[in-house]
Image 1 (spheres, rainbow, N blue to C red):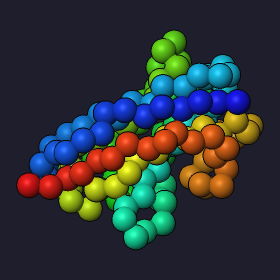
Image 2 (cartoon, one colour):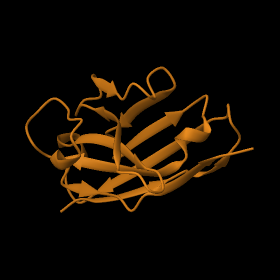
Image 3 (tube, rainbow, N blue to C red):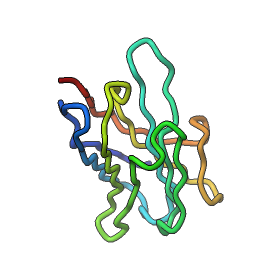
Length: 125
């Protein structure tokens, strides 16, 4: 079993930055592929980005590429999502998720077996 807890959400003005954290417990963190997803009101949950087990590979949705960066610290069992140049369209609940299968990374929501509770990010002036 894997437990994930996100933190760092909040209200930020357009053009601002936020850093989300996701702390994991329950199994060896370095064995998980980690992903970030988001869900805006009235919309389906969508892929934001993913990072491989050793952090060497990241992949992002086109909508956030160049603005968001995923990193992980396996010694701290934590994955991060640095969000810069935030836009009102980035407003959503952000979720981290863990994929324990044997692959490099995944963009598919259904591949992730474990999910956090989500943290709200609101971009507004």
